[in-house]
Length: 391
Image 1: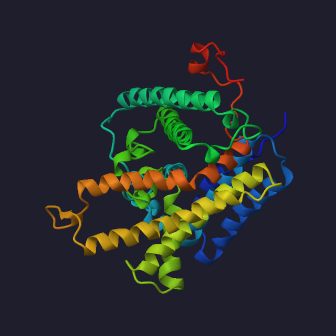
Image 2: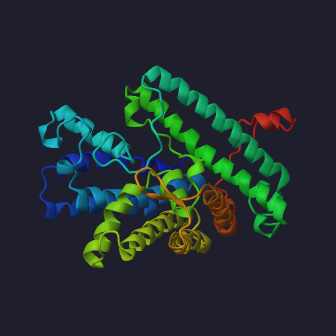
Image 3: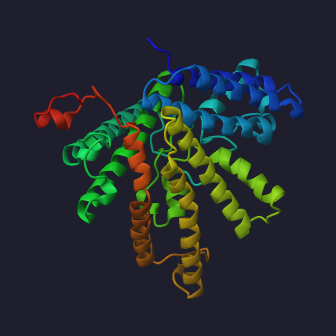
């Protein structure tokens, strides 16, 4: 059995736990060596372990870039031993040896900082399930809903679009289809993508519960509320998963303030952070694709993510002009809020923006065969007489 890069990628978790503990006794000027250790391990795996399957290789490449960004923030910027603490608990240096180990493990596993001093802002509301048992049943229900939506969406795509069924080998690319079939393909792909992320997260929550974790450490949904998506900025900042946000924020702010001399709240600061975040996202997703198939450039992925920054700039300009014209109202605190009709237009705009810009990225993912899932149980396929397993 061939060794998978993904297996070695998972070793990042215990390695980062160890370097966080070691870093607590290391002077700041030597923290760079922990970053270089992680980087060396990543490059060694990429160089010496051969490719296995597109899914595993993509997750490895994408995940390793994200791990490196996070490692850089933890060891070079954040000083977590003095600034990271769980709510109502002492800091790192006041903890027992077991408490320090637990502190490091929880930081490594908690990408959104839920329940910590570094919690990512504007996360979805806390779910109303406080006990392990109630949260377990909640997670099981969510996994069932996500599976049904995912299976229905994927089955619709493969049964009605030869391009999706053959991973781009034959059939018309969806971007070239008439409007209605293209719209249905986009809606199906979006439903499959969001439900797979949501279901996978709830599956991880169940594993954490079985290992004795308390729901307060992960009791915010991974996907936010869709009614918040009346701008592209709000989609990326409130609705889509925020697991990658903290490293980008911790690096983009010093870049804006110290390197570019931007003032807090200025347009220069704002768009430095926006474009840095999407540049990192483009790099990590491109690295995943290149790790799986190094014979292509995968330029559409880079263009898609970098383009999100320009979409945000455009809508910011439109919103600023609308405010000057007095569009909207004010809430009880005196803060200007958009009118209901404006949020409706905004949702149409946001959906239309992704409908126009995402096809290159979607098609590259399918041509990479990332969505191949031979042998997966399919309820829809079985009920339609096509077999209970994906062929």
